[in-house]
Length: 451
Image (tube, rainbow, N blue to C red; front, side, top):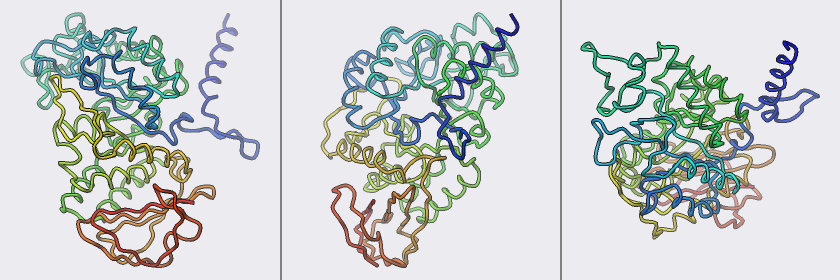
């Protein structure tokens, strides 16, 4: 019996490793740090409540063909679980105040509806990850009554509140039983719905050793599990998380768009990430997400005319770009977070075409692959570095050259050599271009070339 168990365990481990065997080099198997479908992926954040007039999973499913055509690879669903009522914010509450980890919010539909959406998305070649809130529950969650000892308490013995999150109760990670229960409910969603991973809310607030144990359990169910940390904490990406939020870089983009900092702050931010994080850790770049849109403002409020150039930049750097619900039609409105607020899908600024071309360009050019497969990034010297960022990425004979004017002024920039070089075509019209030693760029203009 013992031999049978050992053979079974060995077979499971081999399966868990098998899908991440990248290639054979000199007769040796080279392990991939991430699932194969991650390296040229684009993430799309789904806000179910605001997506359609119905606000249901079933109604959202009608958009899947459009998102596939857009070039989306990974659908990240904001939490779909039931929401607590005690101290609820607004009339509908926060998605992140979960009452029951294994129950779907009736506002969105049923567990069967979610399973159907997952299958439809996967049948069309997309992956699905679910937002996971491991730090806290609602104040009337089923665990509060069943296991009151699983929660952090204040000096008066009341359920602890973090920040201004007055509708939540913080979980206590010093309790082993709670940790086990948390892993069990994460496994529930993989086992019952077949999702491909999780985006983990405030992941840095939770002990890293919990995530390590959780990851070991999750890969037994799905060897190609993908984990995105809402954090910028290097130790999380050593052996657990595939990707992380490039928060610092995002804030620098906002500052530059507002004329508060020079382009050097972007270079410095990227250098800090490269120095702090493992070479295989993937940053997720974004110009908007649910938090930014609702609380800090749309990308147009924060970035103005720089919104499109910075969106293009998120595709050119080593990492994964994010599109938030509505960005692909240029939605210029803050969405209510605790109330119904329907996205308007009229695309007046050709944003769908803009993102579709970026998604296609990223997949076509190996030089734009994410970390571990990423093309070497080299700065192209110019005489206006406080305003212009010029660089190239090269990978297996493929080369992408980028020139961005991140200022609200016309710039005549000179390069130390010919840009982009011989044999390049331009993005996005694919026309052939001649190399030049200088060029004039309009405010916030960018040029991208490839060969």
